[in-house]
View 1 (tube, rainbow, N blue to C red):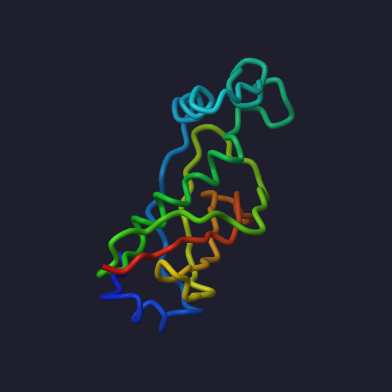
View 2: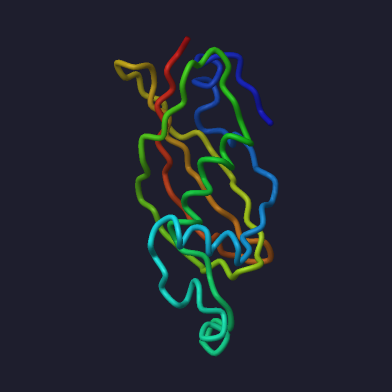
Length: 151
């Protein structure tokens, strides 16, 4: 994990890669829990038998499940000390570039691309990429926005 002692140290890292997370498993159980939590029970995600007969040959993770992993993966990749709160502010330019088959592993790669002062503290924009193990194409790319509120 990359640790920044404060926001000013993070400011100096704009343009740099913040880090790469460990791989995490996206298994059918995780996909089913996401379907339950969101009410999105589309068959390609939850009907294993039907998905097996599809061109993909298996169920796939919801795009929003893949995107939602960015928050936890980024928190396990880098930390900014002397910050009271780190709040999710949203995402820009989200693209789901390849499906994540059930049983696959993904990881996050994060690059700091912009830091802007806001009334609460700073708004950090990171280029966030969810990589799919064994794939040349990432599963998801987005600009992730966070508000960092100093102590």
